[in-house]
Amino acid sequence: MKKLSIIKTAAIALTLVSLLLTTGCSKSSTDTINKWGDDLTKALTTENPFQEIVLFYGTDRQPSGSTVPGKAYGNEGGKLSWGACNVAVPFSKDLKELKKSGFTMTTYGMRPVSDYTIKDVQPLPRRSFNTTLPKRLANSPDKSALVFVHGFDISFEEAALSTARMSYELQYQGAPLFFSWPAQSDYLQDEQNAEHAIPQLTEFIKEVAEELDAENIYLIGNSMGCLPLCKAMAELQLAPEDMARIKELILIAPDINRNKFAETILPKLDNTSAHITVYTSSNDDQLTTAHKQRGGVRLGDVVDNKDLPGIDFVDATKINTSMNGKGKFVKKTSIYNDIASVIK
Image (cartoon, rainbow, N blue to C red):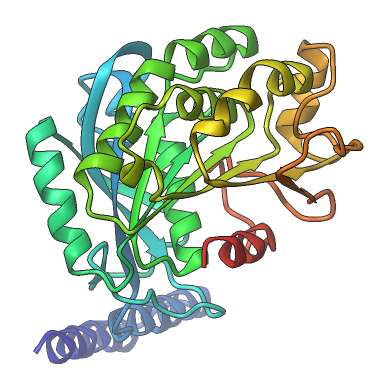
């Protein structure tokens, strides 16, 4: 019925175009109308012009009061809050449509979206979060959860878009979640904000592990977001069966002082059996900024890591490690291919 309605709408639109052409127009106007008609027909007769991914989130950003979805949360720190949001995903000729799960849906729009777009944000009370999310996971073929923590100078909107992109590229079937801390455009301020977010992120991961009936949980951090993620993991207190479900800790170009990680963080990670993968890079934009602001080797730098046993280090210099959600995404980046192999 939906498809028939779209076709009828296209036919009406084309009839209007024809009437405009017969009334007499200049050649340039005729060409413009013809192109408009072709584009309209293509859009209206496309069965799946775009799709949406439902994401769940935790954040210690304060609500902004804005009715614009992407600006629902500002850059000031606050209490931990919970919610869900929908992100429209542009059609990809390479991936085609999303594999169906409890977190994806087909949307019939007037035209295809050209880029990832956050459609709405719905704050949820903690109790609703802990009932809605498990219900959706129950309808998904993959009973797993993926939690993404972004880096510095990233807005709430960009964090959502990055998570949606990751979920789509991985064709992920489980529950996609993200934690957004109040990153700003000031690197040194972001360091403080990342540290302040550790208790809230720890609580968020604990809630996901205890309340969500996920067989496998994957934690993924990028840039400065790896700092609160690692410290949260080091401080996490869970029952053995819940901790065992955290299978992977993936750190992408981690902006953490390498010596401090080795001396103060890594020894505390013996509370988990999670497999740890670190993607290093000599060509990462956020690591370049980090080097200008801070001295010392970062964990994401390409160096000899033989003194850090038990961690898989992958040199990702030749691939795009950017996960900032800004502007138009690159069409292909093999970082997702490698992550897909890790979280299988």
